[in-house]
Length: 235
Image 1 (cartoon, rainbow, N blue to C red):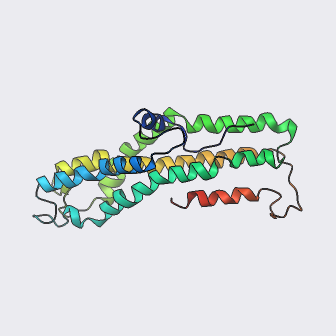
Image 2 (cartoon, rainbow, N blue to C red; image 1 turned 45 degrees about the horizontal axis):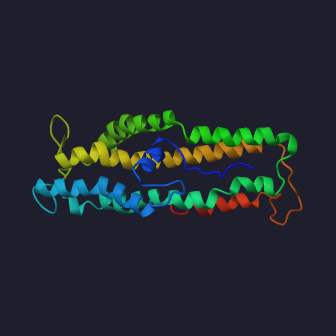
């Protein structure tokens, strides 16, 4: 009787949200998490841009309210990534038990099946993995990709080009060192979860399963796995 399999029910960030009362064991309070995380990334940018006179006009080519990319990123995409956790948790937590309910795992292979589950849980809960993701965000996502490939060359609400490189405004400092890292970290964390899920399926595929060639789902009894695609619709 394996535990419910959840891709999102673990890790240091999840434990932090539990302690800060922005989540519970059932991943409820999704609305509160969406509001707090989205406002943490977007609202200070609005306030700081207004204080610096770069909210809707000023001397910059792209004032804050005209930067559509930022608003879509933090008010649409970011809430979808946070809200998707509840959807994925609810739709996938009973999937692994289907292997047993459909008698797909032979008795002699149960230790390997249990080992695959616990290996996935250890990887999902890894503090080291999340630290690596965070280091990658700051070391590559911000200092390399954003600075050199996606940051605009024109004067904007977040930076002004100069001979010594772009000079960040106060809003730009928040954007570069907090808002963008939050977005990139949550995005990479979803890719990491997909790696955990793919790795688990690969380990199970190494087991000689009790497949039924004449099963009506036309996939030997594994048709329930295709339903996991619907769990990722928000993403």
